[in-house]
Amino acid sequence: MHRSAIQRRTIASVLVVSAASASAVAAFASAGVAAAADSSSFPTTVTSTLITRPAGTLAPGTAVNSSALGERVFPSATRGFALAAVGQAQYPAATTDGGKTWRTDGPALHLNAAQAPLSVTGVGAATAKIAYFYGSGQVVDTTPDGGKHWYRALFQGVTMAVVPGPSGALIAFVDFSATSSASGTTLQYVSRNAGRTWKYDTSVGGF
Image (cartoon, rainbow, N blue to C red; front, side):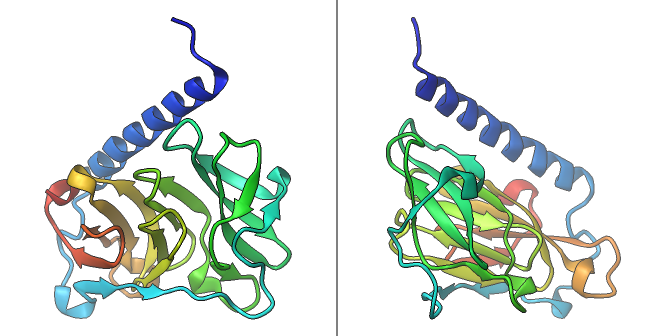
């Protein structure tokens, strides 16, 4: 059976995401996620807020050149997500034709001027509707509906990784020591509603 280039790329993307999920959970579990953390020193529940379009930024649906894209992920043969750097801002971008064309898929997630905690560098997708951005800053930005709405969760620490979990959950690993004196402490948060709320969880992989 011969597969098209798009099909091969999609299968590869699924395998990479699956492998990343398993390895990330295993790595953080072996390190003892938040084993010694005092839950009174950080929020055990983080509630996301709706991201609105900053003034002077691109409107959702604006065409972007593929050269402006960073890492890309394809949850299906045709649907893909990426982070687009255009001007002085970073945007969620999406394709519905397997990567031939890309458009902004929501408001600017980060403005280069004075928004370091909101910085994102990594992208992932649990489904063709649920995508997320994270990394280098203190946030996880998620969409539950393919880009119609985006929500931002601001953590007390740097988001090191976000991976899909069981039963549609999302699992975020947060370096609490980056913003506190708790050296070497990694917190695990689990969202079971596509990133709207996140709860601190010490069970391995959130289950």
